[in-house]
Amino acid sequence: MGPMGRTPPHPEVSQFDLQQVLEALVDPVRRSIVTQLGAADEDLKCGAFDISVTKSTATHHFKVLREAGLIRQYYVGTSRMNALRRAELDEAFPGLLDALTTRRKQ
Amino acid sequence: MGPMGRTPPHPEVSQFDLQQVLEALVDPVRRSIVTQLGAADEDLKCGAFDISVTKSTATHHFKVLREAGLIRQYYVGTSRMNALRRAELDEAFPGLLDALTTRRKQ
DNA sequence: GCAGAAGTACGATGACTGTCAAACTTTGAT
DNA sequence: ATCAAAGTTTGACAGTCATCGTACTTCTGC
Image 1 (tube, rainbow over the protein chains, first blue to last red):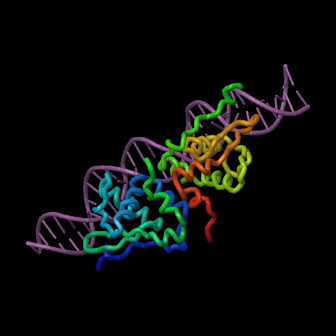
Image 2 (tube, rainbow over the protein chains, first blue to last red):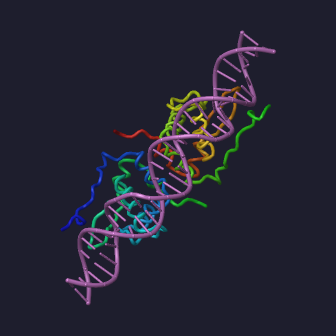
Image 3 (cartoon, rainbow over the protein chains, first blue to last red):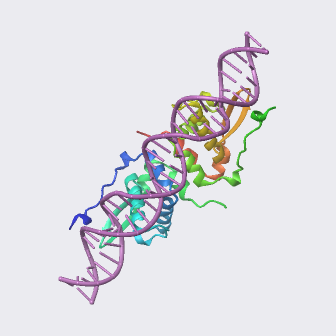
């Protein structure tokens, strides 16, 4: 169990910060990640997302999402799995996730 | 009726863009403006807001908010009044404004 | 062991943007 | 007419950040 096996740090719900969450979600790539994760209804590995950036950039985006509390990350083999922290987000910011990931007309 | 009397351009609801709205609301000063406007329950002139930036910076923020469709601006004398476009925002992005302006625990 | 797969870490870079000061414009009051 | 009040406009500047390439690490399978 090397350093890569260690679970990266995740904030608790009580530490969620609206400013940080908004800064995470204002980026189109990151919002797309969250949307895809919400639609999938299952955990996804980093490589499973349809995003148009290089791997190193993707790593950066996942880190921002994790540190804001939007996703939970854990390893399975060489793959890093991503889980949407939906319940905790709804607790901290009721309605926010729905408002941002709901597909609306047009 | 000089050029200052002309109403500045406002987007229609059908033109509202989530990306633009989020970019407007991610700034703490602008989000504070929207929050204050929502709490006031009446239109406010630019100078009536409690913000810690110079007038020229404030002008910039109000412009960003107006172009995103968050506020409607009109002149009364030398004062520029600001109205929150709450109903139209709720129509375009249901729940978003509430999620961002509701005071939550902590 | 070795090669490949899956990410991560580390600069470097370019674009964007929030901020201000200074000069200007319009309006209302004296 | 003049003056002050309220914003606007126009650069300039500094800090932030999304992006990439390259090198590196960890794990799995052969």
